[in-house]
Image (cartoon, rainbow, N blue to C red):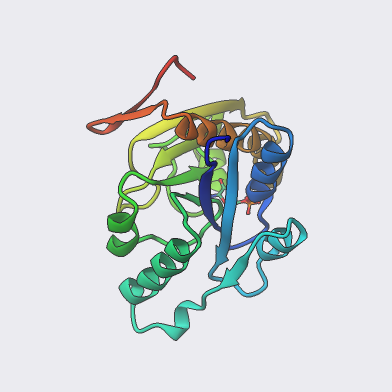
Length: 207
Ligand code: GRF
């Protein structure tokens, strides 16, 4: 009897290229996990289509159908729990997550952000990086707390910012690293290699 695989729930608002990277990593054996559910706040999110293509359950929950953020997030928890989710991945989920999710999944919510945090949290990370003239940018995978793009950092990958870069060209370069980093971090989690101490996360054996 093989060991049960880690069940992940992916929350995504858009394109879903990081979701696709997770599917690829599972297919190629880089990641030993199963996507239990893909959930989106946007009806037309491409991520939902990608889930269908991979025969993975998917659901659209419309925030406008709920009185407030807590009620919406409680509905997310109900859905994730119904699909036996053990780890929640925010992969381009454009909403702040609140207490109901963080309480139901303590230190079990992971986000990916396209900058080297704590630089440039929030929207338009690439635009912010270009506006500051930084020479290096990248992506960050971190555990989530109640603040935007905040919480113990797990892993980062850097890329050069080149002369003449646009938001699109920088985003493309960073995205390649995102697609490598996120599945690797999930695999570390699956292997029980991540330890949070205070505001820091340590990866057993190093990243
Ligand atoms: C990624 O750049 C991710 O870092 C950010 O939102 C984007 C989502 O892209 N949080 P995709 O939907 O995974 O293609």
